Image (cartoon, rainbow, N blue to C red; front, side, top):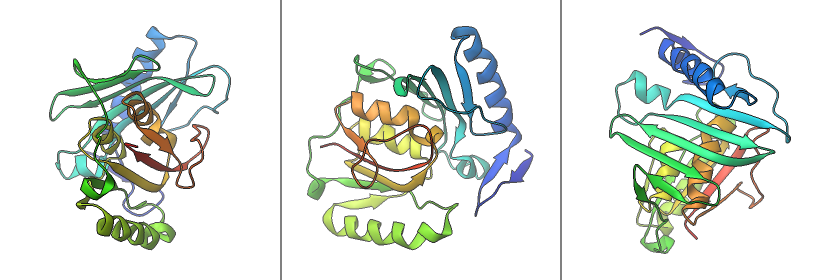
Length: 220
């Protein structure tokens, strides 16, 4: 496996990231030829609130993938006129295909998903540490400690997309990260909302796919 370092602490890309992205670029162009393509690796097309865009993370959880720590996935979202219309996340280690279509619910393989009905006091909190942004590290852990005192426990997986799948599946009650790129949350945010959850930025504002954003996903 060939590994290159990118800007930011512990930010890597492998030859597999590039290969998967190129396969997706070609395959998705055959399905929706008039959609632009925004992927994590390489040059990116400019996002617009009008038109169709695929937003793709070929391997979400690249450090996990490098370490053979089985928490990585492929994430694909179709954005139409600024709104997520379709989201697909595939976890190859468990053969779980998460998918959602706006207005038609969220699913894992054939099972319909629904967020947890438990309060935070009886819930699990998932979080990301914004590892590529050192200035946000301490604030991330301070927030995690606050939630740790309010919930049953906290978890840190290393894959934002799979954490959002866990919220949509009712396996955890809240997820937060102080900055993520659109390919980290585009598909997962639709899964959560279609499963009955809520996704905003940390301040409670609607999320956008035009630039990086903080993310707060919850069951209620």
